[in-house]
Every structure is written in C-alpha cells, then in structure tokens.
Length: 112
Length: 113
Image (cartoon, rainbow over all chains, first blue to last red; front, top):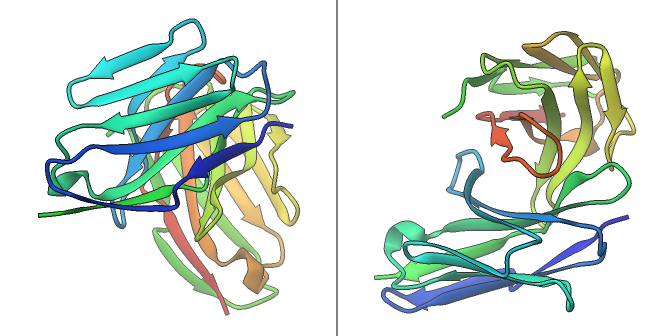
C-alpha cells in the first residue's frame, strides 16, 4: 500500500526566513497531495493541495511543488510569521482504496 | 469550519468498557472518516463510509466498529476499550474520495484507564 514519509519532524526558523517541508510517497498511482496545518489543540485544516497534472501551485506565502518522477512533493513557506507555528501534515491519495495516507507531521516553530 | 460536530469532546473510561463516539455533519457529504491521532504517528485511518450502511476498513481497524444509518451520522464503537486506544479521534467528511478536501471535526480526546 501507499507509504508517506515526511521530513523533518521538527523545524525551527527565525521570523522572516523560509521553511521547507518534504514528503515522499511510494504509490505511483497517487494523484492528490494535500497539506494540512494543525495548531495546538485544534483540528487539521487544509492550507494547499496539488494534483498530479500540476508541478507547482502557489497561494500567497505558501507554495507546493510536485515531482512525480521522483515521487516527492514539498511545502514552501516564505516570510514566515509566528502564526505559522503549527504542525504540518502532508498526505497522498493512493493504495487500492484511494484513501488519504498522512505523513507523521512536522512541528514548525517560528521564533520572533 | 464545515458543519461537523463530534461528541463527546472528552471521555475517560475504564479498560473493558464499550465506548461510542459520534460524528454529525450538516454538509450532506457522502464520505465520512474516522482517524486516530497519536504522537509520532500522524493521522491514521480507522474506518470510512461511502454512503448509508456502506463502510470499509482503514489501516488500523482492529478493535473498532462503525455504523452509518443516516447520511449525517457516523458512529465509532470500541467494543471493549483498551489502554492502547487512548488517543485523539477525528472525524472527517468529503464530497468525493481521494481527490477532494477533507474537513475535520473538532476531535474527541479519549483516555482509557
């Protein structure tokens, strides 16, 4: 079945710096790759997603890139702010059932 | 937030007792999911439903059962709770499977003593 690896598990940056989180997946049939942000004690919420027919997608300070050949995708956050501090999860739809398989998460801390 | 509620929001129960968690949606979405979230494991799918009375297993289904008798309600039951089932449980909904956004409920924190 699908397996999603996410790195790093923790990331600390200074306010204003960029942050990059990377994920790899195993199922070449996976075709949908969302990213979720979860603040402490809150529910996960979608921040951006990309489908397999697109290589890059941007939304203000957030961008996601997809490399289907290498089977990896990345989240890029520019000009980080303290409110970006949260746990970020990547996911890929795949496997025989096509359900989302989540990475284990990256705890991002943005220091003022 | 999408119209998803979970009840109870917190529960403490003893080993061996049955527990039922409820997820209720007002969005009329076809797909509903139950996940558990544990430190170091991310979100893992327990069971999901693709319609009334239509359910299937996820990756960590042992010890759990589900039922969906109405579009808006999806129940998760732990027949005999164990300490390993201490976790935060999230319900999610989506209009379609795989390629559509999943909206999560607020979560239920379950402690099995």
